[in-house]
Image (cartoon, rainbow, N blue to C red; front, top):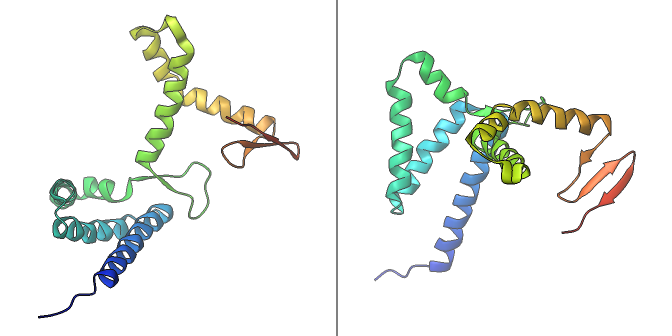
Length: 164
């Protein structure tokens, strides 16, 4: 009868999973679609091994779609997954996170409509969301606003603190 070291196995599995998540994050920051695909393949094995059938199915479906499409579409699946707003190395974010940012801005704009919300006004706001984002960015640049953390803003080298 073999004696298993459950504490060692637990911490080893936790370390491997943490390194896998760091690899995901680094591949996204670098905008390396080929490495992200390799990480998806490795994650597929983890999902299947630990009984996460739905995650395994979605990952497998993505990999099959990437291999079975035409070359131009396969390149789009591999490389068109990142967004870099400010330029520079290692500053990419995933397109899912970008969509979440746009949804947050859209929801705040829809809340501002108040009782005037209807389908027509919501459509107008949704169509103008990228322009609104550009305007807000230019205002931040004009007033030298830099977001330091969630509640600290810097205006002309003075720190303003906001509390919830």
